[in-house]
Image (cartoon, rainbow, N blue to C red; front, side, top):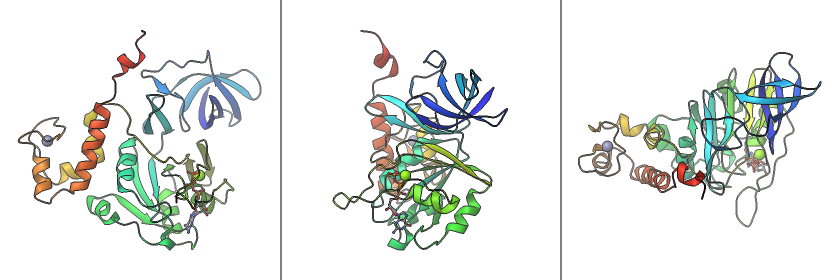
Length: 302
Ligand SMILES: Nc1nc2c(ncn2[C@@H]2O[C@H](COP(=O)(O)OP(=O)(O)OP(=O)(O)O)[C@@H](O)[C@H]2O)c(=O)[nH]1
Ligand SMILES: [Mg+2]
Ligand SMILES: [Zn+2]
């Protein structure tokens, strides 16, 4: 039987059967899932799992189908990739201008954590002003929409963009992801105040959740303070910086644009064709990934 994972808490899943439409409480058969790659929590919300019911409302999962997209991050503590949401059509990166403040470097990383899905940048809390520096992302070609759950501005436009697809809402804690979902779907997800002392969210949402209403399918995810890009082929990182390809042509095949002599990207930065902060952000991510211990050294027995 095929199931869609709707909620995941400590290796216990709410799984919607795609055969009988019933919701099952599911666990992994034999506790370990066979996967190609070691991952912290191998089953994510949005995954399609294969398994069998063993009672009227309980099931065992034996595998998951390949994902067509995901939002994954590097879990620093566990030294492993962690999938936060899977099989979304669109990754909706929610940001706010002031509380918490807009952080372009966070946005760069969040973009790089998404693969296989369209990206939409939602500037929430428009009642507090505009996200400073967002014009750069618009000029690169990222789609943005300005909304406010407080005043209702932009909500209908956002609803239209999201209609008919599955979207995963991600972003810093406190930017208003759950509030926005409540506004869009009429749900009553828990929302939290912004800490006055630190001007950031309090990690109110603590697990990912798939919510569906009419033609809107949204995955709410827990906000994070920091985000690290997953460990994988570094050449994939270039996809998160589309302006490198659009605004210049590096003649080296598979070049990581790491400042090598003759690479066109640093030259384009000097000429003002590519934003310097974005290039620096790219290099930081590239080097952070390169500095991690390869998996065979991390998992090898002593
Ligand atoms: N001014 C203003 N405040 C908002 C808006 N949207 C949400 N908020 C407030 O922002 C705070 C945080 O909202 P949440 O929805 O809990 O944020 P979140 O992104 O889900 O946070 P985590 O679950 O911790 O990741 C709440 O106090 C909301 O009332 C908005 O459009 N304008
Ligand atoms: Mg939340
Ligand atoms: Zn290059």
